[in-house]
Image 1 (tube, helix red, strand yellow):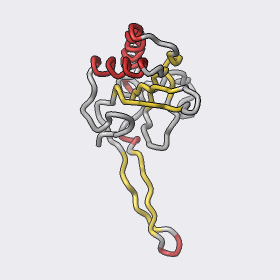
Image 2 (cartoon, helix red, strand yellow; image 1 turned 45 degrees about the horizontal axis):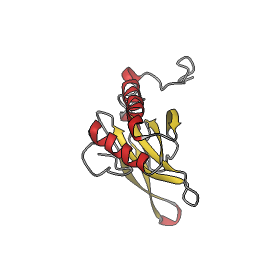
Image 3 (cartoon, helix red, strand yellow; image 1 turned 180 degrees about the vertical axis):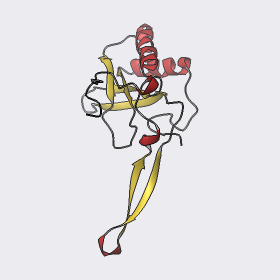
Image 4 (cartoon, helix red, strand yellow; image 1 turned 90 degrees about the vertical axis):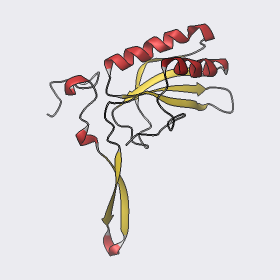
Length: 154
């Protein structure tokens, strides 16, 4: 199941040239760029891990700097969801103007809808992430950056 979050999520994956074009568009509008990654793309998980620092006050000819960061993040976490976020800091707006996924795991298990019966025969539903089948982000089930491998599972 293909996760569909952010701008362009229903289209085929963007090439690096298309990603650069979208970054140029964002910078042309005066938006800041940042890169985030996660192994939990649940729609309510708004807090992904930030890769590096946000890029403020970029010029159109500095897009390659952000693309190098995207490539480094892909290399560090090839099995993670990675997205680029364009933040509009203009007064009165101050929000994410655009975000799009630039990397996906080789296998996306997605979510399933689980139906259960609550008290008084009320039928309820919940979304369950099929994460158990995915494992952790990284190669060979290595922990994510910043995790202490000696305390995992303790």
